[in-house]
Length: 183
Figure 1 (tube, rainbow, N blue to C red):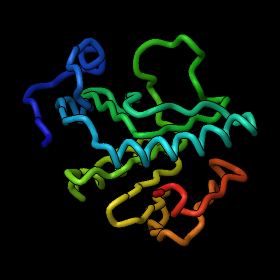
Figure 2: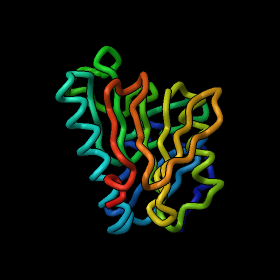
Figure 3: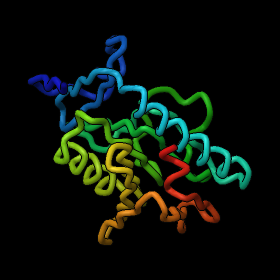
Figure 4: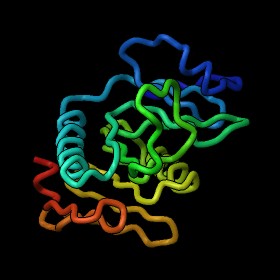
């Protein structure tokens, strides 16, 4: 269940909240609160994180961030989104020790769809990522066993279990069969 609060909150106010065991995002000044993700969501997100992080480290490409790392995508009203996995090229990553939500969009944002995520909510997240400058968004649906690749100005591509996902220009040399991510 998603809880929407009224009013206009800032990214700094979101950062100072203490809502244990909740997933939060700020969408155009409105706080979105959700229950923690379930087992399957976490398992698939972890598999993607490990695969992407190993590739990025091996090729010294940049930084990979875990679930619930917030990015300030818009100000006045503020939008802070938190993908399940994010990747930033080395030349775009904030310095280690940086506090708060970086005011930039990751090069890659991965959203693992939970059973309670509506198609509209997922579409809004994808639109926010792309509008803020994210180059590629992967939407993984463990239940449907698909992965949809979204890129600005392109028609989304749906990959099935037997298809191979590549990193394109964002993650050069990355390649994995979708089934391996879904387990």
